[in-house]
Length: 164
Image 1 (cartoon, rainbow, N blue to C red):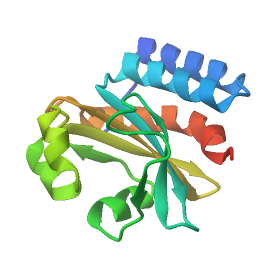
Image 2 (image 1 turned 30 degrees about the vertical axis):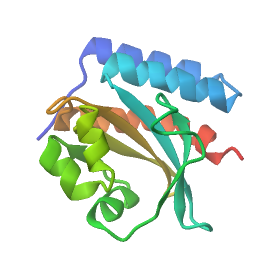
Image 3 (image 1 turned 180 degrees about the vertical axis):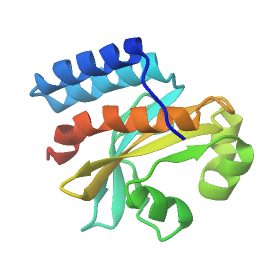
Image 4 (image 1 turned 90 degrees about the horizontal axis):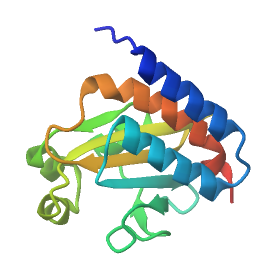
């Protein structure tokens, strides 16, 4: 299957990369990304998880819901289907509550919040996954066609994941 960007999508992507490349502050970069992902894909929850291999966890560095997903919160790096998929740099698309139950330990809370559509895309630097971008929304909200475009946006965030 092949997917081509519409001109408006391409223009937004170019403008985002131009703005992102000029920022020296990680917080500003993550906030810019959240707005860009909202405009392009929509989300009810947007989080960024940084890989901390030494500690064996993913550490949350950005969240639009600090009550449910506080900064600094961690999830273990697991050896499950989701982790192998996104750990290899591939996208993950969850469409409904069945997908949430299958892949996420906190599925009950997410389902209660109406967050059963999920798009995860990896941030890759020097052939290593350094983090994930997580978009959550209503069922069936995200499509396979969105995945590659989300990945193009994601790569501009590498400096935020590399910062200490």
